[in-house]
Image 1: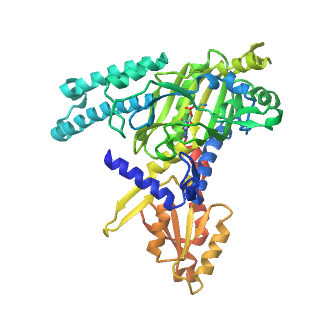
Image 2: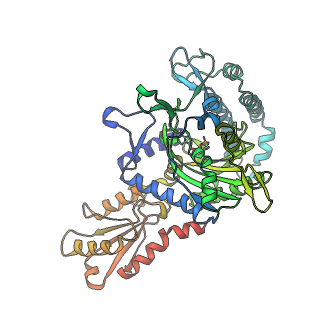
Length: 513
Ligand code: GAP
C-alpha cells in the first residue's frame, strides 16, 4: 500500500511536470480542491470527452445532446431534493479541530479490515505455493474468519445507519470502532451534523432584491427540465436519452486525493427516459454498456468492478458504481442510477406545469422513468493516467517513465524528430508535420539528443515518434518508434498517415465497445 501511495505521489508530480494538471491559483498558494488542466491535460481531457460523447450520440440513434446553463431557477434545487437532502454527515475532532466525513471514516475502517484479511491471504499464498486453496483458507483460518465477521457486522450496522440517516448511530460506530483522528490521534469527537454541499451566489443587484441561485451540483437537472423541449422539437419517442457534458460544483469538505474529489469538476451525464415498469431492464442494459465502454480502453479488465449501493440516494430504486483500481484502492468513477420518476414528478409538482409524455403506441400519457449514467471527467482522467503510468528499468539499467495511454486518447499522436538540426533534416521534418497536422496532433522537437527526446515523448504518452535522418533525404523513409515496445522500423513517409490514423482512430475505439 505504501508503495502504491508512493506511485500516486509520483503521478501527481508527473502531472505537474509535464503540463497535465496544475494546482489552481498556484502563485497565490493554490485554492484547495480546485485544479487547472495544462497543455497536455486539456488534450487528453478533450479526447476523453469526445470518446464519451460519440459513444452516446453516434452509437445510439435515440440519444441526443444538449448544453444547458449552469445557473438555473432556484426552485429546481428545491424540487430535486438538493436543498433539503444533498448533505454530508460531518464530524469534528475537538483536539485537531479537523473536520471529517463520518461515512468516510467508517469506510476507511472497513478498508482496514479488508487489508488485514488480504495480507493474511497473500502470506498464506506465498507459504503454500501451488497447493494453496484460497476459498478454504478464507473459510477456516481463525484470524481471517474473525476479521471477516467483524467487517460484516460493521458493514451491516453502517448500512443501516446510513439508510435511517441516523447521525447518532454513525457517531457511536466511530466510538465503538475506536477510530482516531489521523492528525491528533485522539478519539475526542463532536456530534455528527449534516452539511449542505451546494455553493450559492446572488443574481441581480441587491437593491432590487437579488435572487439566491446555486451553482449546479449535477448537470442532470438541466436535462430533466428540458426533456419535453427536446422530445417535442426532436420528435423523440420513448425510450430515448439526452446527454450532456458540463461543469458541476460541490463544497466538498473532505477534499483530497488530487482531482478525485474537487470542488469544481466536470460531469458527463446521460438521462435515458423509459416506460414505467421497464426501468430495471434498462438499468441492467446500461450497466453493461457502460462497463464495456471503460473496458474498451484496454487498461486491464481486472481494474474495474461494480459496486452496488447499500444506501440509495433520495431519488433512486437501484444504483451501482463502476469502480476503478486507483493507487489508493477501488474507487467510484461512474454511477448508474435508476432514478424512477422522482425528478420529473417533482418538477411537475413544483412548477405546476404538466410535463407528461404522450405515448402514441399505448395511446396514453405518463411520467417517464429515468436511468442515469453519470461519470466525472476528472475521475476518468485520473483513472486513465493511473492505469497508464509505468516506471520501467531498461536492459541498459536506465529507467524510463512512460504513460501507456490508449493511443486514441493520447494528447500527441505523433512526434516528428529530425536527427540533427542541420543538413536539411529540420525542413524535411517540418514538411512531414505540415502534411499530417490536419488529421492528428503532432509535435515537432529538435532539441537534445534523440534518446532524451524519446523519453520526453514517453512521459507524455505519445504512441509513435518518427525520426528523420540522412537516409530520409535519399529514399523518403523514416524510423518509426513504438512507445510501448520501443521497437523501431523503417517505413515510407507515404505510409505514415494510414499507419498512425488506423491506430489512433476514434472509430476503431468505438467499435470495440
Ligand atoms: N447526477 C448524479 C450524480 O451527480 P454522483 O454519484 O454524485 O451522481 C457522479 O456523481 C459522478 O461525478 C461520480 O461518479 C464522480 O465520477 C463524479 N464526481 C462527483 N463528485 C465529484 C467531485 N467532488 N470531484 C470529482 N468528481 C466528482
